[in-house]
Length: 584
Image (cartoon, rainbow, N blue to C red; front, side, top):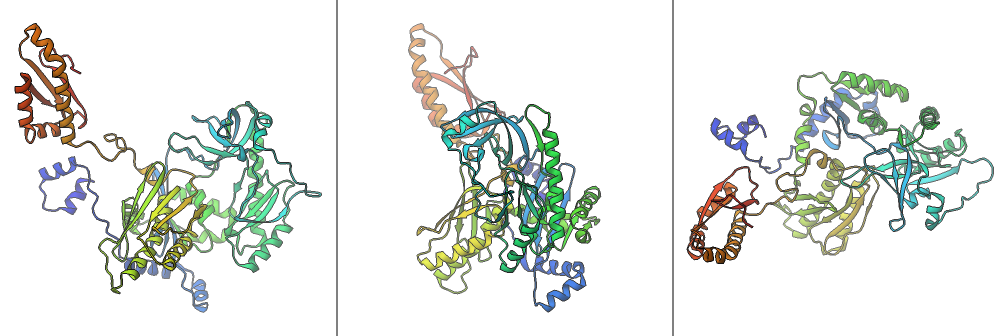
């Protein structure tokens, strides 16, 4: 927190008091949600100005009022931030920092370094600091994906079923030293190296090209039966190189044949470039990387539903227009250069929404709250009633209302924070099975907005929901924050009382060992000096003073203390004041 922010929140503080406040860690205040009505009103005004006149007429005729969708991009020298807004409310947030390598989706030529039969995995040297993890079932993938409807196999002649290699025979077919082409599916997280697969896939705007897989299919997220029938015809008529496969993405819904042909042409060119790099080169090296965040935004989010894209950097604006022109010239009109003097994220109330994203407590409209805690193994989410406002007067109705609001808020927070892995949600207990089903249905409906793969289990009688979400990279909060160098990520340090007890215990132990020797040799009174943190010294001088006097009288010893602010609150030294040697 800056001096300006403290002064703004507490205008009566003097300069001296402000300096003292800045020496303390910033206090996380209660979350203050932005007025939803005001955000909606501002978004409606922008929609009236930005939406084409013909589009407004179509919506009026169909009696539709779709949300106003915007993509706001803040490009700065050290980081680029992308926020996807729906009616002014942030629904997705991504950050890419300068100097950070994004490995997910990258294709490498590697060499199997060693095999671990116990883990049923190979470790592949891909030229990175850590070897990549390649599970046996990813060496020879089965290509089965429930999210894809397979339409045809792109193989000349009769389709022959490939002979499946048993996992126990993998070491024979892929011994140590084998050169192998892999793609990273999960980046390095903590001490774990990246996870890889041999099933290469190159995503485009409307298609995903699979050079090593001959299956052609359609994403099951396209639900309209008539549209699916049309896309099946498109797949059957497309000319695709033998042995390769494609998947039509959800962005391809409603698109004409020429869009798919253009996209396929660009993807095949990318694959040819990869093959050229592969020819004649030895060792482990990178063949392909995913585009930067602006390129990925154009590819993944610029759909027909998006009304406009605002970006505040002219160079990146020109690059984005160039990338869009290759795919859809019709979408060029949606890309606008932001020129206002107010920072772009402040102009659209995004900064305040982002601040709330990283808070432990997320407020709910009814007065309840959601508490989110990330641990190394899982993410724990707790739903509390908080200062509830029960308008109906029925506790059961209120509990269901809070849980429904929490399900929507949790799904949104999972997307915004990019939380992955195992997620445990503790809803308020619901005895009624029908109420639990309503909350489960709400959670699954809200999570459909998320492109990551997920699996949600029913709520138990104790109100616990378990779910998993595809984890490709670390969460956003992990990238924003670093482990506390003082407490090493524990979030707590020992209390001054605990350290005082430890010091007294150690002094007593030392004196019991030394006193018999001193009495035999007729030495003078022993003087012990303790070096410690000022916080602990304050405790010893006040509440524990009488205990120290008792130690001095009982062991005939003189105790002195010296505070050193550089000492960690849990660290101290006990030394002989005369010789300066450390006593243990």
